[in-house]
Length: 164
Image (cartoon, rainbow, N blue to C red; front, side):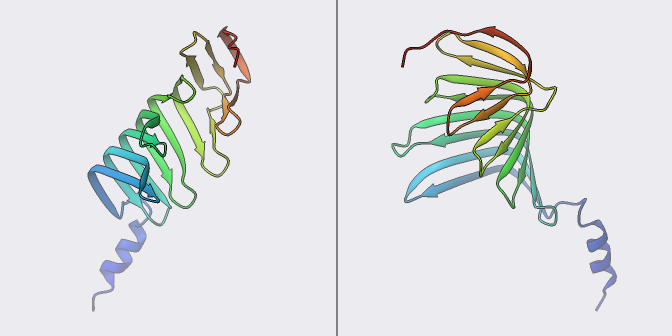
């Protein structure tokens, strides 16, 4: 047996992906209903780091009627496979049909267990609602459960009051 190949593989294990998949597609199904779909031009899986790196990402979330409720794109994604948390970077856009709102940014962090989106401290995030509300700033945090959004600084824009 040649143990040298195993030793080399272990030394390079954190920097070399376990596999690379082109035209990657992932579908999550619950009780026969599609709840989430993700597409990527390329996916690199690093099992020792619990990470999957995606390029040219497109994702869609569906309701029980198989209607798209949220969809988005990003240049790059990093999925933390041990938590399902994700980091999206590059030119990214997320649109929520349910909230009639679009978020654009260069970076967002998704915390799956808390269902929150967070921008970088200095990163610029823009929130646009179909009603005409346009707010932008840095230090963005969005709670998807409560539908509360906040910015820490450099906030500017126009808010249109909506009578629910």
